[in-house]
Image (cartoon, rainbow, N blue to C red; front, side, top):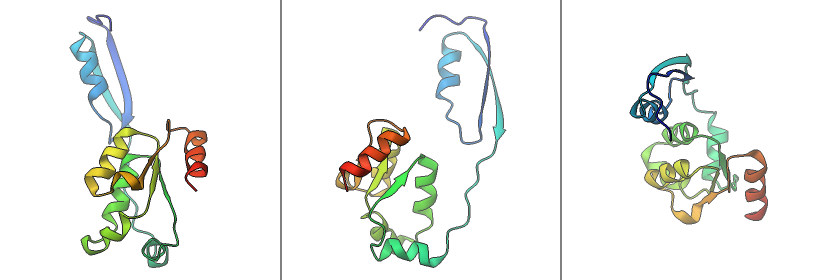
Length: 130
């Protein structure tokens, strides 16, 4: 990429943003300001009936649209029950989320990676793997 010397760049992002873009721009000489425009906070776990469905295998697949969603889902289960959760196949659209899933204990056979993170690609992956 070209030199961005002395260009002022403003990045608007959420509280969970990654600094990679800003760092890359700074390396190319840009003056970067970052403004947090929204906060992301996890919601309380759903009721036990919904979580119980995962345990009883009534949920065949889980679609993950963000790494944060995956982290929150994993945190809702105590360590004794996480082994049941990680046997449920995940459909996701990013390699970053797939890597996170692996680090949380999912195996490659339970990680279904769509070609890209669009709704269409995730739907196609769900249909192909049904």
